[in-house]
Length: 303
Image 1 (cartoon, rainbow, N blue to C red):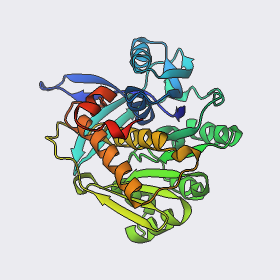
Image 2 (cartoon, helix red, strand yellow):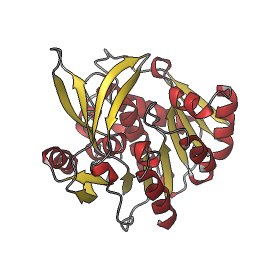
Image 3 (cartoon, rainbow, N blue to C red):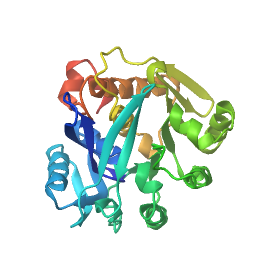
Image 4 (cartoon, rainbow, N blue to C red):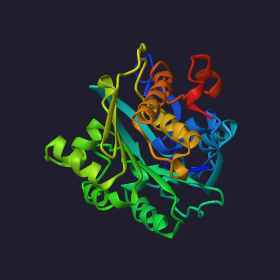
């Protein structure tokens, strides 16, 4: 089983008419958990969920995908993320987190049978959740740890940079975008920052938007092109990529210590790209099911 820790929220996307918004279930970690469940990978979501109508909607959506919600459950309202604009393939949001279920941080411990943990995003960066996040990690048994910083300018505080770089020794896999890396580098040359990241983390995957993705594993470096797809929007595409990557790793035995060669690394990235392609072609974070992936020839991506 893969545990996913972080926030669940509602994305508000601009509708066709000015002043109207379309609500979509979101939150980067919740999107990853949903993506894993739809690919038939056993997953459990750890994050604050409201008991309001939107919170029940998110929980039911996860449950329909086979994802158990570990909670905690809160009487506070569901947090919101309003999509403001999309610049160079990067979506910009305005977040409404204070006084919401985002601040419910009494997460239960990892359940028996968890072989990997994926976490990150706002819960790892924004107080008061961030302090509880890193303290919670210290109390958990050691499992394969995947991390996505998912930097959100204007919401992610500058102090997160030091926390991220200081934590490299914890991570087995870091999946981040080029924009994430540039923000974390804080003016340092991207190449130097990437070298520092590779020195500290066994497996690094850098997504480049229209430039595809590049994976690093030890001395290996593999680049895959972007998917050929008519893009509706990019909301949740990175999360779908992560879900595809983790689903492949689950089936390949990576969480049990299987090392990657060049062919395996290329296959992992290709599978992640196939999963992300579905989300790029849809509005909001709407990852594919295993049946949809298999129908397009991606059955070998999940086992």
